[in-house]
Amino acid sequence: MNPELRRNLWLELSPRRITLMTVMLALVIFAAAIGKDAEYRPAAVAEILYFFIVVFWGTRNAALAVVGEIRDRTWDGQRLSALTPSEMTWGKLFGATAYNWYGGFLLLGVILVSDLAQKGAGPAVLNLVYLVAVGVVAQATSLLASLVAIRRRQRHTRLEVFGYQILGLIAASVVWDIIEPNGLLELLHGSKDTIVWWGQPFNSRLFLVVSLVIFTNWIIVGCHRAMRVELQMRNGPLVWLGFLAFMGIYVAGFDAWLSTDKTMAEWTATALRLGLAASTFGVLTYLMVLLEPKDIVRYRWIGAQFANGKIGVAFWSFQAWMFAWIATVAVSVALAIAVNGHADALMAQAFIASALGFLTRDVALFVLFQTLPGRRRGDFAALMALLALYALLPAIANSLGVANAMPFFFPKPSDPVWFGPVVAWAEALVVTTLSITRIALGEKRAS
Image (cartoon, rainbow, N blue to C red; front, side):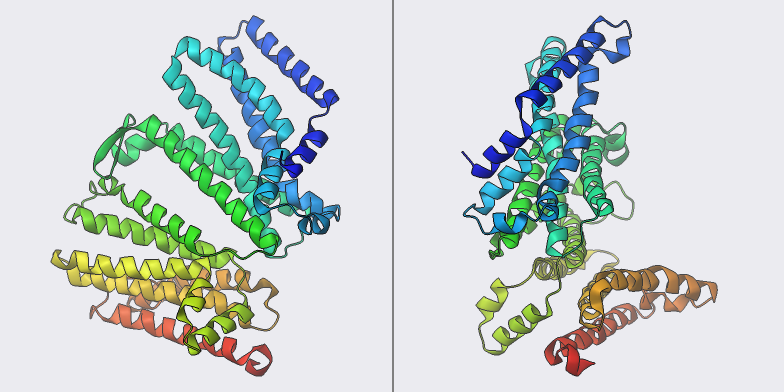
């Protein structure tokens, strides 16, 4: 058995704690069963308790799984042990939350019996899978957030740990809003019973539960890769490339949801799908350039590999945001070609070129601020710069009546049509050149 998991089970599942959880849940369920309030029947009460114990309380324990070891000064010893990243990941994720899952499984039994009696086997199993998956998603998200913070060498105060827990709760809330749409599917697609994906209709409940299970596995994979880094192991790019391919294919399949828009009605399905994929890759680029540490020494080493002709070695050492940026550029170029037959093809192509220019400028800004002296808050400074570029300066220019200045700040149709792309790529070239220069010279000489 996994040694880390076994250690946590010994710590979490003591006979005293098991007895306490069992007796308390049995009393609550019995009180609900004999109560006269139809709204709080045993299954409903069990579901409420499940979300409290597994999701709310469980995310707290998951967030503390590694951070607690760091606080107790036992993490360095565990990192030097013979435990593999897989053993450490599973042991922390399900060991630190074992007590929560013990209570959760007791409550799931109550929910399953009720669903089998009222809804049948199919809906009962789907609901069971959903509840288990939402708990794993919430806890794994909190664990992943804490591992990312450890990689960024944050201090892990109580407020920061609460932030990791909040991220897990947000993930659970998003899952809840999607799986129990309450009008969301009708708003986006016109129906809550079916989802059209890649032109094929699917039962919405089944499709969303399967999607949830897949994304749950991806989050666990993310925890495993973050744990590998924490254990001083090197991650190759293949898993991230696989995730990029999956996300591009998955999101691109929802093109039917956009075709009802009048501005999109004339676009071909291929163009819509490429646009969705490019947007997804762009969002992942921003997310990863914010989360990943910008290691100047690593960037300098990658540049040296390119200079020595070792392109494969350099490519293998790219960070995740670099691959996401490359994917965004490649799919955007394909999109520009796909819209060539559209009535406003030239304007659409100019918009795509401008968007790529500003994306390049923005990721270069994150790298540039990390090369500046006193860069402990480099990412925060970059975010403030983007806030000024995309919101404050355009608002000031608009108040001054300088409407023609908008293409300097974000993608916007311009006259002449080539003006926007030229401005965007000029800004990208300046910021990228500054970043590369400072990386090449080193901090002291650049200062």
